[in-house]
Length: 163
Ligand SMILES: O=C[C@H](O)[C@H](O)[C@H](O)COP(=O)(O)O
Image 1 (cartoon, rainbow, N blue to C red):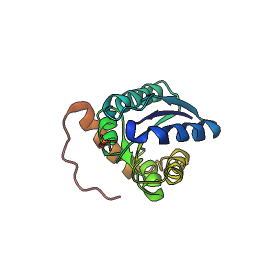
Image 2 (tube, rainbow, N blue to C red):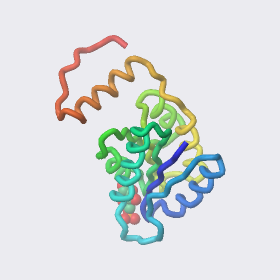
Image 3 (cartoon, protein in one colour):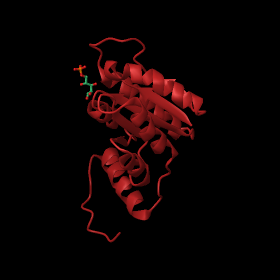
Image 4 (cartoon, rainbow, N blue to C red):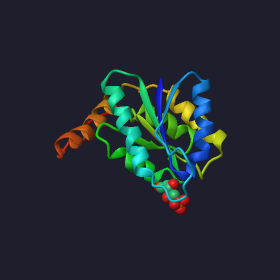
């Protein structure tokens, strides 16, 4: 699996540990920055670059996911979700990591590096990467509705459906 990583100053130390961990697990890790510590750096460009790379890889048929993190993970998730085709999930425990894949087919995980120990966060990321999408019809339908809005700027009224 190719894993695109981005953070900001709040997650830089964690990023180094995480990259070693993922590479050791056999993943191809691509670091979208930052490369050096700057307490005044801004997360959007790093996270958007990583998200664009995930979408480009997936469109080309390459198995790829993204990992973004900062102090809270909130801004990083917001930035990644601005990229068309990205479904970035803010994850804070193992259950949300698994559900992000099972229900949402999330292709980016966002984590608050100031909210967890490195070991805890690595556990969430490993769980996220290993978990497949459920492929269940109701989840496919809901993801398609989000994509419909993303593509057309419009969303039909979808009547309540069983499932
Ligand atoms: O949502 C944004 C992230 O949590 C940032 O990592 C955070 O806002 C950075 O905070 P500061 O600039 O105070 O270190």
